[in-house]
Length: 419
Image (cartoon, rainbow, N blue to C red; front, top):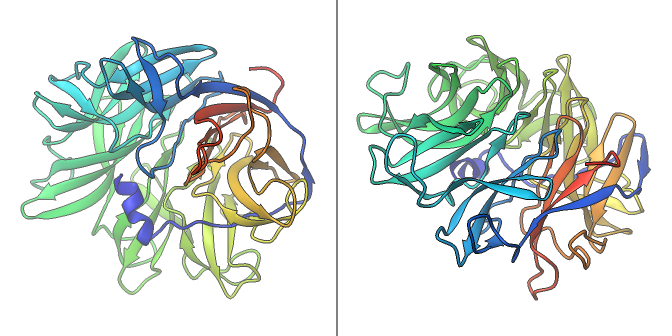
């Protein structure tokens, strides 16, 4: 996954902490899917990740969950699926016909789907036997369409053609943003593109001027809201800030926060997570490595142009102990609640999924808690990730331990009492 290859420049594992009060109340947990469960079209679900890549299973306010899975004893070895209550439908599977010819030949290189409130899904896939070898695809109702394909012209980059496509983001208008590698002669250029209606346009590309000086050199995964605004982390070259978090809309790109800016808890921002979160109000959540600050890492939200601390390393955790390590990326609801995974030292479960609001922090589930599939949660896997819907409900993945204890699956945490 190309976004994860940027981790040497942008991503890191952060630690989290506490706003004002904590609670260890247990919300309602629902099983979305587990390994061994029957899959649509025959066979059974095997795994929900590829190698060491994190499991990202977005959820909408209707409780629908999109996810990637590998399959056993099926005509296909892998695919993307949509769970609605107890029903699971196939979005696209290996061997299915691709919209512009050929068949889908793999999804494991880009196993992260995007989901909107209508239940539409966007994803990247490899294609064989057609006019392209890879593309970004999206559903609109029951129709599957190609958003962009490798080999086609890359708008606004002279003589450029798409060479690699990854990391789609999807909003409720059906717009799709994605990362692209564009081949231009013997050189390659990284860029972010936006598909809106019938228009495919470049948002920003490597070598473009950055708002605070210098030029863009690399990009994290884009986040997209319903107004068409895009948020992303980026590396910058030249005599300027070496990186930051940016928002682009209507042809204008601005920097929300840059490396070297003062943080609200002291010290300065040093590095930023390669994936940020963006909601409909324009708030942006991210993790940051800090320098000359009381703590080394924290999670922040920028609202109204100002960053505020959400949680920081060393803050107290619900049920006791302090936060000691942080999952890869934060997630953000419509009302500004931030979901994250973290490890805890000194008390309570050693790791869990948490949601922070401006006034409290809540543990949704922790190691050792009971699961809807039976048994207890043994591990979140190598790269724990939590996603959150606009309404504030959360998904997370579990995995067996190195010695085989625990179940592999995707679960839904309803912070309301119904699904």
